[in-house]
Image (cartoon, rainbow, N blue to C red):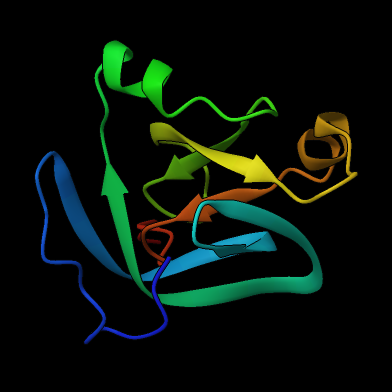
Length: 113
């Protein structure tokens, strides 16, 4: 996650940018996900990057990542992918999953009545 839209990285290999990403139940700073008491927060600029299995093995850290689902919108009906983050220090993975932490590309439900 980046602080502003002008904070885009120069290397966008295997990556794309998402602006206005909605994060529910947490906030993300860099590659770390932190629990939050706020219902949701908005990230001005997010860089999503894919790594090969070989590259991911090289980037291995001491703790297992938390998989945060990325949905198309707030209905959570259409899963786009799962994004791996490093968990907040000393918080069990189960807490993130019980709190249903998730990211949405749009706050629009897409439902027309």
